[in-house]
Image (tube, rainbow, N blue to C red):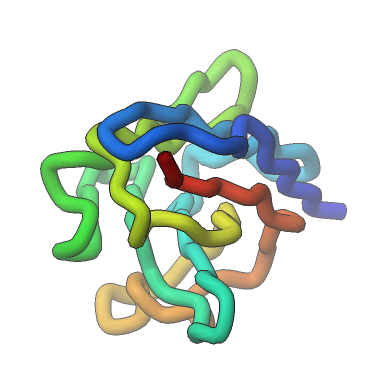
Length: 125
């Protein structure tokens, strides 16, 4: 049984940083693609970032490129989303996901079969 558990959310001022964690059990990230999505109030869930651990290929949404980065700790089987220079528009519930999407679906929810429960990130002064 696959389980993904996010942590690290919270409230931060604009310009600040947070690091989200996604601890996995039931799978190891290696053969999979790990991804982060987010959902703001009243909006649809949107793609944030993904990384194919087998090839190292990384994908970012234009809105977070150069501010966010995806990494993992193999020993802990944990994926991270480092978020820098946070903006109020980054406020959302952040979800991690794992799956084996093809290139055309790597930015789509349907590309992922396993999801975490989400963690709230609020960027406000």
